[in-house]
Amino acid sequence: MSARETYLAARVLNALLREDYGGLGRRVTRDKVGVELVLASGRIVRLSPGSLYQDFVVGADESLTLNEVLATLWAVADPADEAGVLAFAEECREALASLRLHDEHSPGVLAALRDDPRESLIARETVAAFVDHPVYPTARARTGLGAGELVAYAPEFAPRFALRWAAVPRERVRQAGGADTLGVEAADVGLPPYISGTHALFPVHPLTVPALAEIPGVVVAPEARALVRPTLSMRTVELSPRTHLKLPLTTSTLGLRNRRSIKPGTLADGAAAERMLREVLAAEPGLAVSLGDEQTYAHAGHEYLGWLLRRLPEGEIVPVASLLAPSPRGGTVLAEVAASRACGDEAALVEGYLRLLMRWNVTLFVKYGVALEAHQQNLSLVYGDGPPRLLVKDNDGLLASPARLRMAGITVPSFTDERMLTDDPHALADVFVTITLHLAAAAIAFHALPHARASALVRGTLTEALDEHGDDPMARLLRARTLDAARLIGKSMVTAGTLVDKARSGARDVNKFYGTSGPNYLRRPRGGAHMDRCGPFALVPLHERRERQEPAPEGRHTPARGPGHGPGHGQGHGQGHGVSGRVS
Image 1: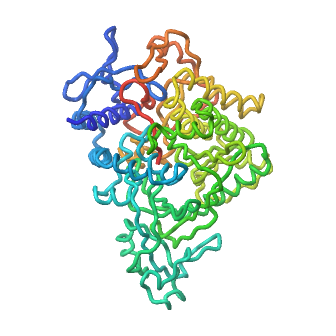
Image 2: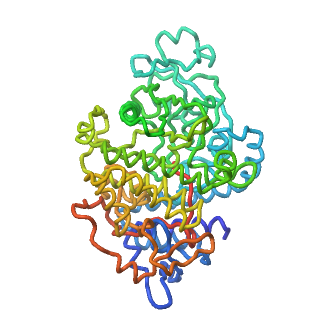
Image 3: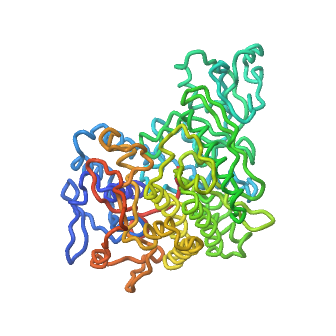
């Protein structure tokens, strides 16, 4: 049993506990000795108080194997979920293989990245992929990809590769932004020049080429063209330092149902969402926010035939997902950027980021009824001559209230995906808590700073942003769902992403499937906080947790819950085997 297997097994068991899949929580016992979980084998696993998103996590001194955890999963699983459990077991094996492959290659990757300029965006995208996902335990699994394909195309291996190209009948093509062939001609990729009269050239990720053979009328060019490097998301590649290209992949990440293809409607929806946000920014000149330009795209009505060109603003761009990652020159990216941009004060840099994040997202929520699905991967800090700005990209997963937008004088977008529009304020709050608060704020702050300092900064910047809106009903609701909440809602990502079929879970969107909850890390500690040996984490004693179970705010909607899981817990960070990092 390797250290990597122990690490991954604990992450998987923590996730299953958090989501209470199959009623796993019924195997937890509490007595004066402590809190323990009985595995299917009869082995007793000690649990430690968790932090951030989860009440209890696997104790740091426990050494588990994946087989032990998966045997327990099988023991609690509903027979109807057999296919999902099999798929998740394969995810676990793929994730472990990927972790070991990464360990083998990471020293060489870091050494090679030292040749990139210190401010290189693509180098920071690469090291961001060194850090694990804060919630999904098997995020390193890319369904169906072997070791050779990962080394050739996954961002943590810093590969360079040439794009493939395909000629698509023009009558099928829908495009926006005025782009056609991205500067590549038919002859450049080994196709006869005359084909340009009837076909348009589409860039294709090399991993997607085999899938095109099944699409009638599409001609795959024999030659590759345009050298690129993958960003953190893998399906988005760097054409040039300010230009990224998003392409569909046939693999899945963050669950079997999270396919990395590009549904044609998402391109138009993302562009419409960006235009709506630009309209908001025009009305809010005091917000230091920039948007990636995602108005240029094309598709041919198929999930594997599409592309999006993203243009980025001038300045030094620091992906938020890279802050906790190792710098090729030693230390962390956060420490390196703080040295040049914040007089070496890492806490000041984090505070500045949180203030930008909270002011932007609280303003969107309260005044406009908008909640962004902008996690670490979709956020960056931009440094130039003036104060830093927050860069936001990839907006096709947001939720917006038509009623609030109309009240604010903002044009309501005509999204093709009707799930992006809702007037339910609690649905908006669910996104704010699980994305803005958990992933964009807490997952960074609590792993960059001591617990007390991080808690004070997240709480303080959120309070400051809410106070700007006084007694507005939406501000009151968001305060009730965050600062004053007994517990904070979480997602059941493993349940919805892989384990339970949509027909049984009822999930309309596997990325917005709720049902877990965890302790409210925004609350001020009541004394007696314990200190975690890996950096202080306030742990609330069990009897205090029980005392804090006051009713939720009146009118709270019931989040979607799938079969085989109940109230759940939250995500495990801090003591034990909790981790922080990447979001894909």
